[in-house]
Length: 314
Image: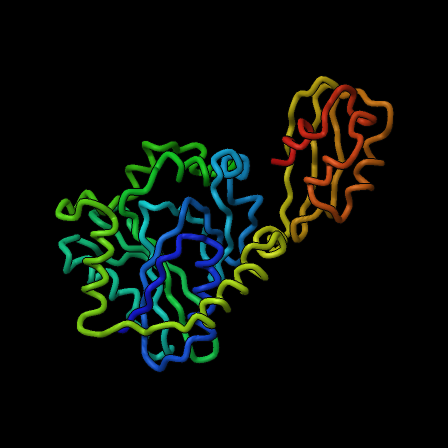
């Protein structure tokens, strides 16, 4: 199978590259490329960033949030993870997912397809994939865990009330597989990448890209995939409740985000303040949670700083 080369590790640029390959690449047969992301959580097209991701942990660790153009669930990427994308005419990709499992088998991994989109190794998940159609084309892309940081994976996806929050690293480790445990002949992920590339490519060659095409990908990344509107604003309607103690007393916030901004908001609790919190709620309608930092919240919550109150919304 012919291939593209994508050495970039910028998650937003790589999301744009996937869309470019699907929508803008002039091909009449399947092509593939292997790629990596710096630490990032990649959410599905239809997911809420607020409900699926531990945003405070991402902020603390400098982990990027990116939204992809395919459905499915949130995944954690780092440089211990290898990703693949296969793009081509719809009729030619009926077994593309199976090609990856077969390539792993040729390298010595007892991989098998399972369920709707998983590859398992001795009952443990090492890969999942998602897909998107556009006209008569399809893109299939997925993860291959080589030596992923399971601690960061668990924390990044452990939102309150989630299975991961309750499970912890030990439980995650029992359900997922890092492929390095089955491929000791490869000293690092790049050696694994090269070997997998050789199996998938066979005797086929590279499809080169013009500088103008790469510039178009960069422009798309800036205009779409790096933006708040894409990564947060596309989030579906999501409702939350959170309680925390502050110098003013205990505050419970009840709020709904629609496309990332407040559509419902009210406060309850035994807190003290000089002005009714309904005023603050009215000011924040249609705005982002971070806009709290622009308001004099001490008028509504005695001795409570805006950045402290913001923790109610994270």
